[in-house]
Image (cartoon, rainbow, N blue to C red; front, side):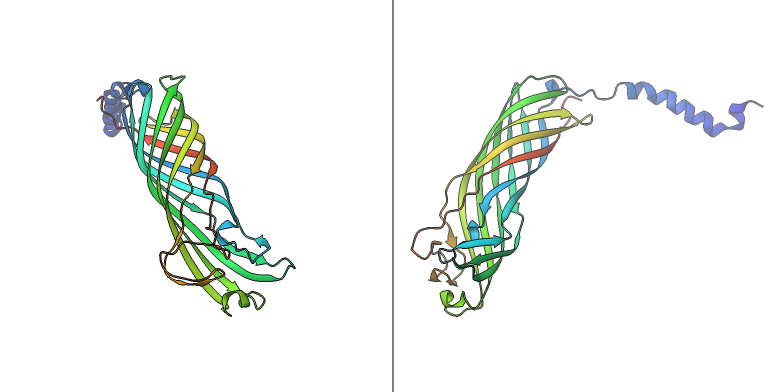
Length: 262
């Protein structure tokens, strides 16, 4: 008896294989020349320049313990690509490595408080890119962009006996303050094919945040005295608090191109 009659299932599988092999040979061949629209998702990380600034006060001489050393972000949106240029429109969400044990001391080394602090930012983003050294499966870009962010910081203080005279005897207090700000971004990236419709992109860039006016969310009392919701965040001498939210970063992203050709 023929082997194919003894094993009919094997025979059918082989027939299906011969049928589909030509189809697989015609699988989609990626080329940047044919790609125009892609949802995207990016992840970034960078070195924060904040340090202890979000919870500093003039009555405190030195700071130790945790600081804001790193910042992280995620961005998602839609990428539109044309001849030699591209446009991204999306939303950027940014956070920091939370401070869980920042310490503030006077000039004599006496600890005045410990603090738990965190910050969050989010808002719309956009970026233009100019493409050069373009090949069908990889290219390089100069990226220019910017956006708008809503930012908020929250500090929870535990005050020692030495620090309590500066805050009307409080042993604990919290403060929240927020701002709205613009930012600009510049970077260089490389994009290469990962699968038949997906590319991976690596970007080295700098995120510059323009100065902003910080205002309290809610009322309370801190080292600068009593404040109300909407008051400007100020130091003891009445000068405004300023935070530098700029940072250098590296980013990895994925572009999921939509097949509009076939």
